[in-house]
Length: 531
Image (cartoon, rainbow, N blue to C red; front, side, top):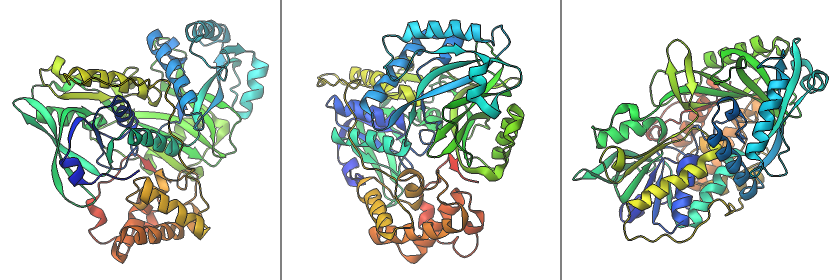
C-alpha cells in the first residue's frame, strides 16, 4: 500500500471522496471501491487514530440491546459480529463474558435467564457456533468465575460470548488493504480544511497535506464525511442552513490497560455511575477483559466540553481508577498499574442532571434529502461492530447521486479481508525493529514515530515504553525512520519528544529535545495516552 500524493488526489475526479479514516470511513471506502466506484480516502491525522483505535476491542453481538428493547439493533449486531469473525478470522476470537446478578428481581438470574432466551431466539440464525447460547448460572458457578471480584450479595451470573479483536492495528491495516485492493487512493495526514461548493452542491474538499505543507482541491461527485466531532462544523461551513442538532453531541470515553494477571474470560463489575439502559439493572457495568497478557478495563464515560478533540489526563485516569475501586474494593487498583489508556469521544445524548447517555444508533444523513444540499453525506458511527453495515447504507445513498453509474456486484458481507503481516516485533532486536519500521513506512502509511509505536505495533499499548528502556526504544525507531524518510537530527529529536509526550513519558518530553518546527506541522492526534 502506498500513500497517494497530493498531485494524484487533486488531478483525479472521484465518484466518492471519503473524509475521515476511522473504521467507518475505511469500510465505506472498501464498500465503494468494491462496487467499482473511483474513491479517495483522506484523514487529517493517521488512519484509525481516533476512537477506532481506542475501543474496548469487543465485537458486540447485541445482547445489551435486549435491555434497551432495541431488537433491530440486536439482529444487526449479531449479523455484523458474524461478518467480522467470518471475514477477518485471523483477527477475531470468541470470548465468554460474565456479569454478576443480584437478588431475584430485575437484577437477578431469573430475569437475565428470560432475557437470554429472548436474545438466543432473536439471534439464532445469525450466531456462529463459536458463540454459544447466553444463559444464567447459579451463585456458586458465578462466584468461582468472578473470584475476588465477586460481590458478597451475588445471587447468580449472566453468561454469553462476544468477539474480541486480537490486534486492532492489524485489523485496521486489513481493512485499508481491502480498500487499496479495490483501487482507492489513500492518504493520511491530509486534512479537509473545508468542503468546496458550486451552486449549492458540495463538489469535494479543499485540503492541506500536513506532510508536505502543500494545499489543493479534491473533486468528487459525492463527499462522504466520516469525521466524527468535526462532521457538524464541516457540513455547516459548506451549507449554514443545516441545523446543528442534526448531529450528535459527544462524551469522553476511556479504557485502560493495567498490569494485572488477566481473567480467563471477560468479567463485569457494577459501578456507581447511572446505567443508560431502559431496563435498569443497577449502575453502569465495567468489564475486565484479558488481552495480550494484560487486563483491559472499560468503558468509563464522562461529560465533554464540546471541543473536537480530547486526550485523557492523569486526572481522568485517576477518576476512572477511583470509580473501579468503588465498584470493586477488593481490586485495590492504583494508577501506577495503568500502562496504557485508550481515550476518545463517542456520540452521546447529554443531560446536565444525569450525565452522558451513550447513543445506541448512529447518525447517517443524506443532506440532499434532509437539507437540499446535493453531494454531501454525513456518517457518525457509534460502534466498531456495525461499521460494514453503515458503510453499505452510506454507499447506497451515494449511488443515488451518481446517475448513470452501474455498480459492479460486490457482497461486502461475505468478502474476506486481505491477509496482512504481524505487527509484533522485538524492540531490542535491531534487525526486527528495522524490518517492522521499514514495513510500516513503505507499506503501511506510517509518517511519524507515534504511528509506529501506537498503531503499527503494540509497543505502547502493551507497556513496551514503560521503564528505563522506553526512551531508548523511541530513539531507535526514530533513527530507522530518519533513514527511510530523510529526517534531519532536529526532526528526529522532535519526533522522540512528541511521542514521549503523547505516551505520558513527561520527563522525556521536556528540555532540549522539545524544539524545532518540522514535526509541529503535523496535527496532534487525540485519543491515546499512557500513564
